[in-house]
Image (cartoon, rainbow, N blue to C red):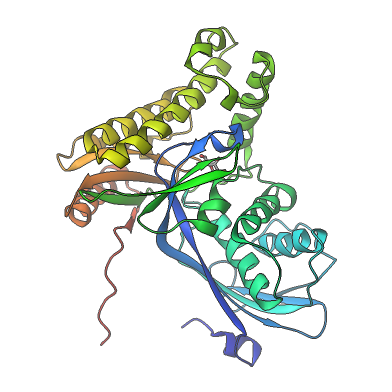
Length: 372
Ligand code: GAF
């Protein structure tokens, strides 16, 4: 049994706040290129409970990492990278203080249903839950978009993961069942509900990734180099007419550009298809996005390709693709309405048999088991 806030600190919390994980429907590796993304919240959340202290100590317990019930401490103003989960909290207090927000010490208990390293934004959901928790605890004047931008700073400046703005925006403002169409260059967004007729599926492959690790950083650097060589500020500034010119860049830069440019176009086409409830087109866009990630951007792994291929072979699936940063993580699929739970169970079962991995179905969420 997990210790409660009362068990850990001897009194009840003053604030209880949640932030969801997210699944990106389409628009992968476009956010740090100023492009378009289309994430949606998932039902799994990160929960934080907090209480103020009179001094400047921060005392924190995460139930998902580290020894159960272990309390980790630091002093505000003395945040230092330790290469562990506490860095997310240290990053949050560090960026808040740098932005001029007054904090005192506090106690916090963290728990999450978003699986770590699953491509479903477990870390952004933690950053945003903590930022919203501290906003409530200290009455900070911050709106949800400012919270998202601070969340991105936590990752980039403190944790050292050079990620874009999609995940903190999704975990701060997106909802379940409604896609968030975000233009990351203009920071403009619109909400696009999923049409009836489709059941979204999210399956975690069980192969974990780590974004502060090399591959994500390498992709980002390749995009920056390609943009510089093509004389634009960001790859978003290119269109399909620029692709012949990009194709002359040394390999793999031309392929990286082709992924970003065509993926941006696919996001726009997906939004249109969602509005028209054109499910076959949505499916084609998903598979095209996956192929582009696999061949041009090279962020897939065999286990993820297997899940997507199982989707392709299933008569109830319209489309499937790798979601999130890649190198492992999860797959998102669109299935015929009413079939989501059965399709997800069937595909996860076949995948487990063929890969030896232990997949987890996040969406549709299994109904809570009745209390005895
Ligand atoms: C990760 C990053 F955090 C996002 O910013 C985004 O780049 C994504 O990978 C790929 O689309 O989730």
